[in-house]
Length: 156
Image 1 (tube, one colour):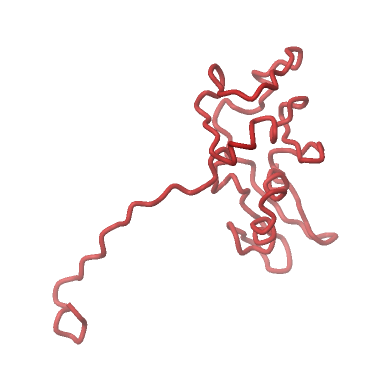
Image 2 (cartoon, one colour):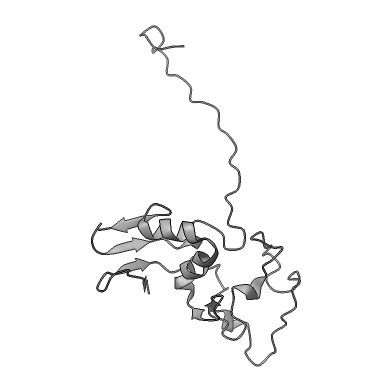
């Protein structure tokens, strides 16, 4: 179900569900609430070993964003719980300029009416939450000029 985040009363802006890895959500499918949470910062060796944090890893760790108490939620710096469909609120705490631009429709993808219903993509639809920087792209060779264009005033 899409999440609404309207700025004005009556304005409805929606986001699609996040692109979860199959079998990774809901977290409570594997995380038993009866087992105490290990809050020690450490590399994941059993579960989630495929996740390598490259997102301010000197200062951040899993439980800085993921709730230890309510495994199917994220948490803000205030401790307030948010659904994964509201992850933009979590990202916006540190990336305020990007959040402002996203809300205005100039960062990320937004579709809909300029003064009405809108749909936004979540940050995680384009950026990995664990390694958000886009990987460098390999430059491609220039296009090949079609035969017959040389000599028509176009440079070779």
